[in-house]
Length: 227
Ligand SMILES: [Zn+2]
Image (cartoon, rainbow, N blue to C red; front, top):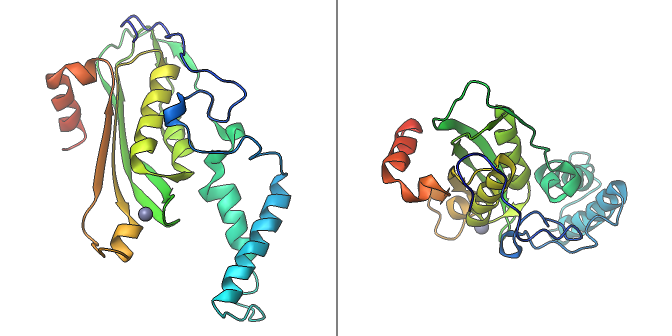
């Protein structure tokens, strides 16, 4: 827990050798320790080879000039875009500034685009994240809130873990537990297969500090994000 004067809590689970070592073990994405021992280019080449095998098994003719470049396109998209947030080198540095304006009300950054990928089906999860915090002695540059969301979204994910990863990371880096994260998202695996429900969406939330204990504050957050 954190006091409200903005002091950074001593992180409890730091394991600098582990990927996601900034997070407690139960919130880490299951990544092998050797995940980044392979150079990016070699990884793309290997994945392109595996994707070629999938397409061939489906019976597609890779000599067709529309399909020929697909394995490498997919491999690059996986490594450099969809799953770029697996790489700890991509973790955004969250710089804080003195809260010179003495702004101590809730700050809400809403409608942050979430583009993620269901780790059970490898199809997109698309939606919006709404993030709020109450500044202590320091404030953060607003775009950093978007960047933290994007970093954890760009991985194979489940929405529950994504929500808690963002909440925990923001509590640590903002030096306050007064953080709220709410994500509303559509899962293509629900929309396009299985129950084939194109209209349901999934809402998850993580409330820390005063957001967890103060119902009026939580209601105000909901009102701000139009809920
Ligand atoms: Zn799924």
